[in-house]
Amino acid sequence: MQRAIELVGIPTVVVTVEPEETRQARPPRALCPRGFIAGHSLGRPGDPALQKWILMDALGLLVGPPRPGEVVEKAFD
Image 1 (cartoon, rainbow, N blue to C red):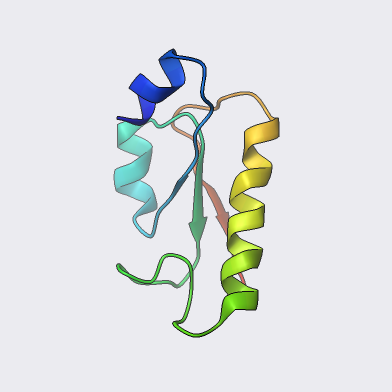
Image 2: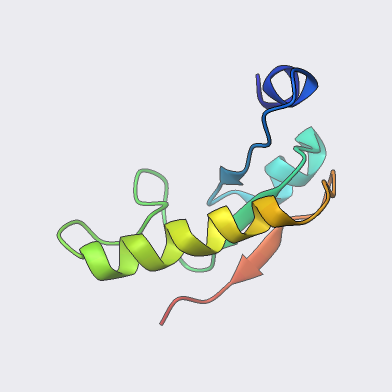
């Protein structure tokens, strides 16, 4: 789906907790917050500051060129 959206000119980014699986899918841009679990890819419930931090970093990937297969892994401590 992400590739189809990109083909019509809309840049996308995926936030994932499964970096190895995501690398295999080769999305144009991907961010993996380290240590997070499925269902909590944007952080702990009730922590809007952390969630905003992760979203802003993910959106920051949109200013660069696509890097299929690269997953930016980052700690959000």
